[in-house]
Image (cartoon, rainbow, N blue to C red; front, side, top):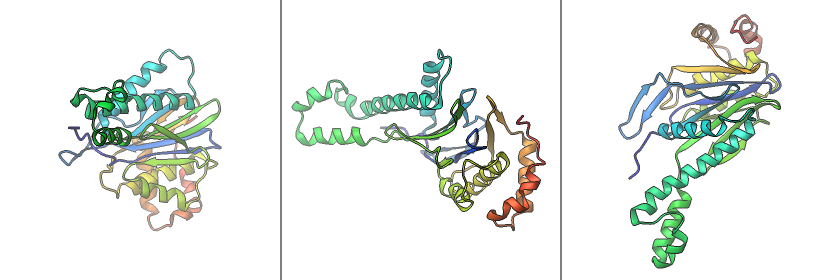
Length: 276
């Protein structure tokens, strides 16, 4: 039996800006234990630093995130430089191997088989059993989704990695989100025809509002963390900045989102968050 480690009840958002030279990311801090239907705000960050300009954020089984990050950091520890696409390829390889290992533990080892000897031993099984095992292994969902966001010599990048260990690049769209709050956050970007040409302040406002909207979804926590990737570093926004953003949002609740550039943008530029 597989232990239920939780589900995709979270929100993680990444948005390119400044002509794809920077990335703004956020995630909530809610953890959900699906087996017990328990939700709680956890002090650990869901924004995991892989290099000084690349992070991953995950939705799904928390223990598998830890295993994946540990394996990934071992692989890149000896490299002088790693581009974001290079990191994505390494994550995919780790994901695929971990998924097959778990499928082997669930479906083959209980009957004394392994992935390596299954093709040879399948001839001694009934056709129905062999077909059922093949289907279980091929359709097994590893239960984790990943956003990889970072900046390298080619600029900013956003990738999505999901079951069974494949990736999609969202650089041309300029943003992406995962978790149960995904539809709420996505609508915020769609309504404003968001693109990677947005300036940093407008990107921060879009990501902040996307996170706040996502809080309407089940399993998304109100606490959150925001960071800006660029200028060869990762800058986390202080609580004072988040309070200023919330104050602006509260003051402009009656204003339609599409009008924020006229009403809110001038006020945003007065917020100092030390990006330079």
